[in-house]
Amino acid sequence: MRLPAAATTRTKAAPGDAGARHSAQAPEDTAWLDTAPLALKDSIEQMDGIDGRPLLFDTETGQYVALSRAGTAILTLLDDAPTAREVVRRVTASSSADPDRIETSVVRFLGELRQAGVLTLAPQGQNRRQRLMKHSLRQRMPRFALTRSVHVLLEPVARLLRRLPVAAVVTCWLLLVAAGAGAVCVALAERGVPHLSSWAWLAMLLLAAQIAVHELGHALVCQYLRVPVREAGITLMLYVMPVAYVDRTDAYRVRSRAPRVLIALAGPLSDAIWAGATAVVLLSTHGAVADVAGALLYSQLFLMMINLNPLLPSDGYQALESAMGSVNLRGRSFAYLTHLVTRVPLPSHLLAASRAKRAGYLTFGGLCLAYGVFMVGAVLLSWWHIIEAVRGA
Image (cartoon, rainbow, N blue to C red; front, side, top):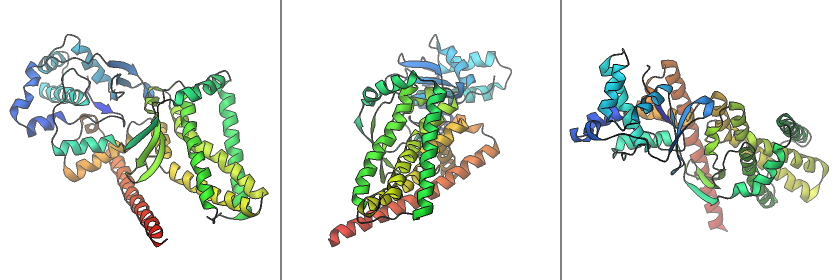
């Protein structure tokens, strides 16, 4: 039996490192290992989700916890609410591995389950370093929900699309995207890169409407796949950039990678279609209408570059993560950076990574951090210029 490992999705707080906590805190904090009966909460459901991975889902909080196969084997030992020490004894009795190693691993795993909030035993308090690791793994920006009724609007459309062959729906969609991309290329070749004009304010209004359609694109694919969309609203990317979002957390239930990639790319693909329509208007008009179309096309292309950049927590990153079959790639990368800088212990599911994989996480996390700092600086500078312009007016 290999050592258990627990991992969390980006939508929940990451479990802390139980082994480090026991050595860093007072001895009485470990008393629960010998006395507390352990069992999953009644609200916890077990299922197989992304790439067939075992998942725990809390119906009360809407949070997911991803497990290893060995972790699910340990969960079967909780049926009669044993203590942690009893679980260790049962695992040791069925394994030829080193007993001390088994005890350390199982205790760490059960402590992380406790911190994840899936056990009937309440989570322990965490120190500052553990909270820093939790924040690194969580990677969630402030959100302001505007509606929780997106499914009401989209279900009739999704029901109609489900009657059509999947291949036909996807093919038509991709043909429209290709046509849109072709129109944009022709417009750029004939008119050059468009620029913002005095009509930019109207282009921004049209772009705001397109952003709503962009998010509905994500939501429609989710609805088509019967993945619940929990809410839609505004979030602060990197804490400074207001952007629209739809909560598609439950896409972790989709086992195949291709549908998850389509969910992530639905917004940018719809943007390509609308950019193509804008390019057609730009090519076929003159004067004020062409100025508005040019400013809108400029904004659309800029928005698509931002959205498809995998170094930001945007659609490009979600598509990359889905294509790789990874869970919380960005959070794990920042967890390794946090560990490298502060030496805060890693969660158990990150301890077994190979040296090459750790190097990959650190590289990706470093690139994300550097680009994020650049973007935050650029956005703050833009806000400052806007404030100065308003003051000057």
